[in-house]
Length: 239
Image (cartoon, rainbow, N blue to C red):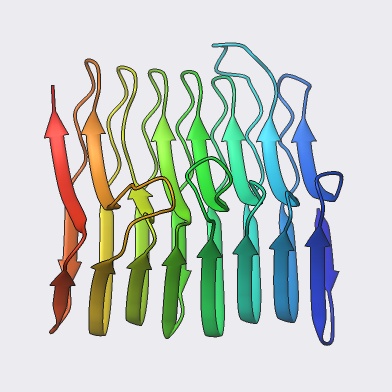
């Protein structure tokens, strides 16, 4: 377990800045990460990550830990900054739960350097789920992803907010690139959801669950009184 509590700000900044847990031994689970602060910032390539690095299809493989964030404001921006959980074997990926009293911002100028909140299943284990609760969610070119590349299931994304704004080529994705099932995307916004504006590399905003191989795509459900899509795509497709 990694537990950090900051009275004011907690900043993870730079490509060598890393808060993480890792299981490399079969049969042992990785530790959780619990972060509490008035403001959490992950920037310039910094990372908060749990992972299992046991490349095995054995059912005895360990599970990755969960990531829990409780803050007033959460900001991830630029340089490939990430808050993530990855399973590389049969172990289960960890869940990510973010509760922010004021706002969550995930930003990046292009698809290549965007910040990301993500869970990934790279083998037979299932990816973890992502839950976000905040009154103000802004993805300014950032990613939220629960993908699978193998036989494991993608995770689900559940977001509860008042306002969700997707700009500058932002992405929410629960796709499957292998035989695993794609995940569900559930976005509840009591005031509004909007998708507008392209990234610097001319990419639109995207909310998607796509099956690129033999797996089935997940579902997308948006609930809001006010939905605006001016530069964006909503897509759930199976090959």
